[in-house]
Length: 375
Image (cartoon, rainbow, N blue to C red; front, side, top):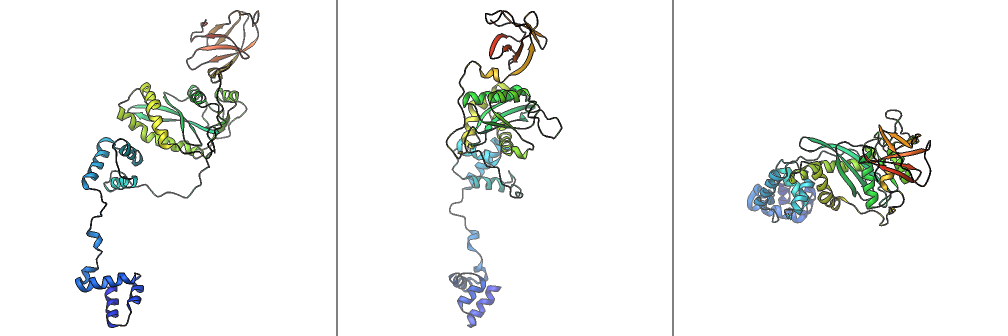
């Protein structure tokens, strides 16, 4: 109606073409084109003729249906990003991520993300690998009907997961295992960022500050190794590792289901041999500096198992024995001393529940799970 009014005024000569175009907010050539179509077809000619045309680069309907069928039959409940990785890598899809997401949203197979909240500035990553590592555990229904704990140790600088494995329950030995795997692969690192779990820290008051003097077994081992421990006081403080667990919880159960894995041993094997290499290739980012802060670990007089283990001090009895968890450990005769009576020794307990007795850096004996000396 506005165009018809301006068209009449232009026809009567009270408005120029330039003035009419400026009032409508269009280019002069556009106004002239509208005038020609109006004169030939009437008001119907003013409709946008692009609405009835199919885009020259539109995907064939068969391709769209094939995409939707693939999502519904093989990858239900996958996130769009996870599904797109499968679509591109395993099914050789040629379309972009935005197109795939749009088609799934149009079909109602995935929901649109809610509007983001207020802008927050993320903490900058450490500039080089080995400066700060995150370790945390996540209890989740990783396979149908079974809750396991997934222990992950990752680098802050590039998001790389160095160690990940399933255990029945998170604890001191599972944390030891994660750190040992990193040290053996990469070397000693500078610091470790963890939550305030009871195996990481002693917290005298609920919700309060951690005790950095009275250390746990894990804290003592980290101090022995020269690795600084940093406590996190909120989930938001561990945002980087929390987001990584969100990705793992979204992808890993579906990958395990596709492989038909229901046992922890096979799940850990799949995690190490297949999933982690692909995951790191997909999510690792380039650190700001190419140098690394890792210091290579060289096995010496003391191995990693004797650093990352449970340690308790005991006083040697008159018969050269010590008692540890109802086990009587007999110190064998050796040429270092005639006896060890009343000496303070350290009993090491390892992940496999075997034990050993140390006097300073010297191992006096190693014992099986029943306390019998291993020759």
